[in-house]
Length: 381
Ligand SMILES: Cc1cc2nc3c(=O)[nH]c(=O)nc-3n(C[C@H](O)[C@H](O)[C@H](O)COP(=O)(O)OP(=O)(O)OC[C@H]3O[C@@H](n4cnc5c(N)ncnc54)[C@H](O)[C@@H]3O)c2cc1C
Image (cartoon, rainbow, N blue to C red; front, side, top):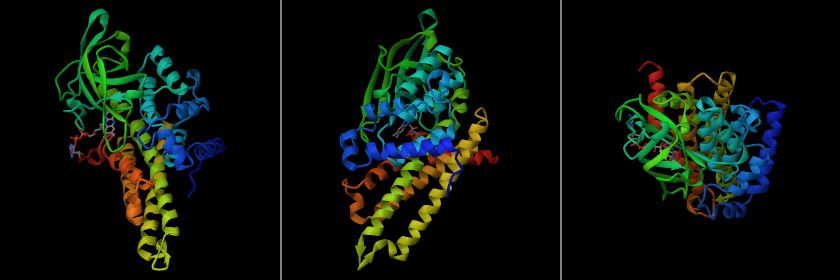
């Protein structure tokens, strides 16, 4: 099925596909760029994409971007996912850019939007040891400091890309108590700020996420993004973007896991014939292909809706697209591993990597259970 794209978008997709083939087309290239899968982000490759003008795909032209929309961003993300391009810093940078574009001052926009277009990375820190799905439970506090600034104390966890970021968009409590939606505020904290310690967390996915410890970390008044105490409303305004970005990436990963599986079941022979010709596997392939096409339609449909009116919050659609695409990606990778038999488990093939990447995609950015809850609530339940 073809997605209805403009001529410019088709040319963009084709340039992206060429780039992936050239830069990450072989396993050897990918191993060299990721130190054998240990790192999710390669700054040199990221910089090349910035120089091509791609990282600024949705950044307004006045900040050095291309002024495109979410359809363009999804094309980029889908190709990054499909091409196994190690530019893990892009997703959080795009999320932070969205928040700063909506609520930041002129100076913050210049720094962050211009920075993303130029190849800088940004991270977002909401989650805490005691506040995961229940974001409003966060307790990290920003108290008034000298000259209208703030002093931050507390811990954040699971912060993707903080170790490679220029700055972190921190959501901290400026009023009220844990559990209150009011009293949250956003700050742009330089990653090298005094009083901020960043410690890596070891995971199945390599070096990606971090604990952040704030101890009397002082920031000036101009670190505030948007309005003090209005952080919850500001977070809600970014949900469309955040969930669609994660879905776009997982659409690419699902397609890649599918194509790798298809290639394998066509080649691998048992009982004298390619295993893909056994009806059980053929039907499984058909089901997965159908699911992926549904996800593609949902991703680009949601992107178009956002492009038509970026100010509209789409809680139902953005939760649906995140839920469906991440769950399908996980299903495809697990089915791929099963269809590859023991070889799906070997690190020599990419399938085990697809499994690791997709398993966690149903957790970050709001778990599948939370997405279902949100969707259910939009039906008045
Ligand atoms: C790889 C990775 C990257 C991440 N990146 C970031 C990042 O950059 N910035 C950031 O701020 N956070 C990030 N996170 C944190 C992520 O958003 C949280 O892990 C996620 O929201 C779930 O929170 P939790 O892990 O504390 O699980 P919990 O909230 O403790 O949930 C545990 C289980 O209980 C279920 N559950 C909880 N509440 C309910 C409910 N009301 N109804 C039904 N089921 C429920 C959950 O669905 C889950 O299955 C990342 C996490 C990971 C693993």
